[in-house]
Length: 225
Image 1 (tube, rainbow, N blue to C red):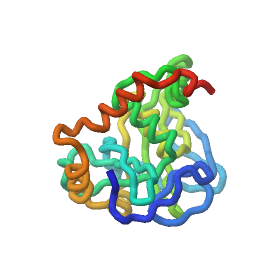
Image 2: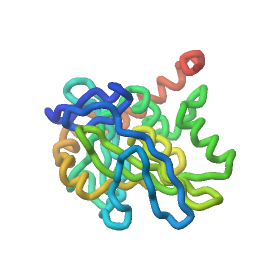
Image 3: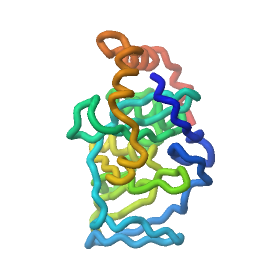
C-alpha cells in the first residue's frame, strides 16, 4: 500500500534508516555496558537519558510502500486502536523490509537471514534481547538502541532501527519509541488505515498469501551468501 505524499529518503543510502528530512550518513556506532543500567557513550554522541525520556511501547503495524516505492516500516502504539493516533513511518532497505515480513509471518526461510543469525549467536552465548528503543531522529536519520541481557548486566548497542526491529521480532522483545519522536514524526493512523482498507482484499490476507507463495517457490540458492 502507498503511504501519503511524505518525502522519504532512500533507506539503503549509506545503510541508514531515514525519516522525512534529508540526512547524511548514519551516526557513530557506540557500545557500552553496565550492570547498573547506566549508559555511557563514545563517538561524541550524547543520547537522551533513558530515565528522563517518555517512551511508548509500539508494535509493527505493517510494511508499506510510499509514493516513490520506498519500503516503510510502520510502528503503532500497542494501546491504540488501528485508526486512532499516529503511526511512525521509518524508511528501510528492501532486504530489511523482507526480513521484517518474514518475522511477522512466522515463516522460516530456506536459509537463515542475517537477523536469524544474530538471534542464534545471542542464544549461543547466553544473551537475550531485553528491549529495543527508537530514541531520536537527527538530520533525517532515526537512531535506535538494542538492550541485551548478559551475565554481567545490561549491554546497550547503538543500531539502525531496521535491524533492531527485525531482531526484536525474532526475540519477541518489546519495542519502544520516544514519545516526542512519535509526536513530531508520526502520521495520522486514520489515513494509513483508510488506504489499506481500499487496497487490500476484503479478508486482509493478500500480502500474507503472496509471501507464502514466494516461500513455496523460492530457490534456496537465492538466500546463499
